[in-house]
Length: 308
Ligand SMILES: Nc1ncnc2c1ncn2[C@@H]1O[C@H](COP(=O)(O)OP(=O)(O)OP(=O)(O)O)[C@@H](O)[C@H]1O
Ligand SMILES: [Mg+2]
Image (cartoon, rainbow, N blue to C red; front, top):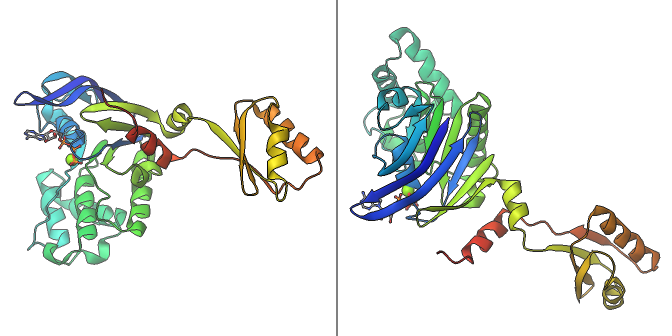
């Protein structure tokens, strides 16, 4: 549904996005992650037809963003990073106005506005004026507005900034539902952990380049530097570490307090035999767990990477 091929975006000779190739199928929530200035908004603005690509083929729903902008608009919902609401319009008035602008027939408009407000749990604020909304509420109203014409592709630039943790969980539910209905959702953030649990796949951008992308589990697996097994052996950690040294799959061992740390490169059978061996030694073993490398670790790893 979203496809870019070697996308480049230049501003007066400065290249904000380099050779970006990206594919987001229908039904997927894709998270675009990167620090300030990474090129997220530039990429999203090209997809939204608001910015001409300097180079590259960019398609949304199969339509070329440069030549078929009208068709792209029909199927696209775009929520900009700094989306305004109208101070003096009531929530429902604003949505009604935009529904009308999108050509939703009058007879359907009320139902559509209600549906979209329900989607973001804002129906009870429908009579409140824009200026009286909190920031998180504004974000939700803007999302409702983005959904009015039932777009197949959603581009949400930092939608979760400013919303509280409860609202974020709600956000995740909304995005999941939209994707399960067959839409493609591209959502950006500078915080991976903010997005990790709502995305099927992510792409991490730095200085205009996509440095890693794919399913989160695959990235975690690929980037995992070493596998560490943590074993609690109360009272005999030092001797357990020495016994485990040199066993199949064991690369190195160390111990801290009652915990033995084993760097392990073997398969599951070898891991299982390691536990059997240890328990067979007769000493207490109260915990045996492979340390999971998580999404936070991905960011730490990436932070340590040199950019070329
Ligand atoms: N209109 C513009 N003219 C010149 N340079 C621009 C323009 N818009 C963006 N840039 C530059 O392009 C780079 C990428 O900016 P962009 O807004 O795409 O980043 P971003 O990842 O969205 O960052 P943020 O997290 O701050 O929103 C930055 O170096 C920025 O200064
Ligand atoms: Mg931005």
